[in-house]
Length: 71
Length: 242
Image (tube, each protein chain N blue to C red):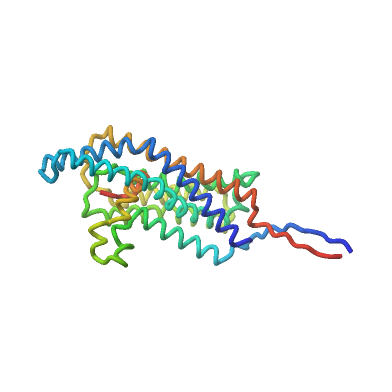
């Protein structure tokens, strides 16, 4: 009995679960670095998060450097 | 396709390219940012909103060190984010991209995406250092910028798909996209926020910013190309017995 190994390149086999996972990473990362003004932390800290804007301040320099609108 | 491996190499290459960009920003972009924030501080002193004393500067220096450390962390997050989009597009388009090797294909796609989702939107809505841009318009500017990126990205994809369906030459798709984005460029509203800093500072910031973003796209193309080539997430080995 002999064994043969075959390498198959799948043409249309991009898994849906991978696309969903990567789409979540894309959206969440883009929002955190590019657009958050306290929104994410407001889920825990309420209105205070919009005053502190912790993520905005932490990502501030990259936000400017990557070309996102800021002030 | 090996799902987990695919996701991991996409996120790893995006994160690594983002860390490279963050590191480059510390060298090339931070001097412009420091200069612009320095001018903001002078305005605060002039308006009496802060006092120019040692207490201010100790606090300020500590704050800026913290913010600069965020440059690399934010680079990793943004890198993984944009890299994820790149990975999805690459997985679907790999077989139709020009280039002999995976790395060449990956670099070509990185070039196309750099042009359509970064450079062309940047020409319409160029980035600015701190001190330029009103707080009241930041949401509007964000929406306009994202809309233009989406128009450019989906426009490029749409004209490519159309040319494939109609079996026309790729040059016609390029011309169609150029016309479409040219119209969008004219029709989309301008950013009317006043420029309050010297154009020398703004231009130097924009050049350095465009340089490091371009380094990100090249790194992303190289990292994903090499990792894909090494791990081959789209190849499945099947065994059969005779």
